[in-house]
Image 1 (cartoon, rainbow, N blue to C red):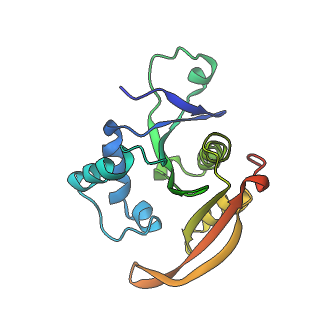
Image 2: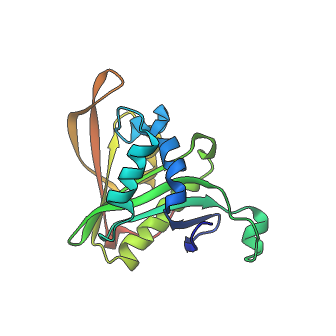
Length: 190
């Protein structure tokens, strides 16, 4: 049974990533389209993902990992819906040091193109700035990931720099583009 909803938008809900979500995370870390964008070069076993969960997700270090779930029309109209919505991805605030943190996000391929990532990342930014008290949030995006670059730019992030040929992915060195957003620049989702 998944944990309670922590943040809720018009169509998506965010709940804390739980042990039962490790299978979903492993699916993402084994899918070439997702893991490559996350700069992971090799798929991960269940044991590796369990280890990652134990070392980084389940500890209280100021970071936040949320599973993205989409509500059906019935669920958004009826808060007492009996079925939990299926998870479609994850958003994370991590490397939280002092008053800043890095974000990452991914959705399963079948959930892309519907605006769920924009809504989920917007909720994460609300959490980062309003609840967690961060002053600055940043994202690192591989240069070939046009959809992810468009998402952060749409949400108001500014391109701050580029790490040239920083990662070796799919047989070539790729640039990583750095984006940043300050609390006073965040005015909610477009």
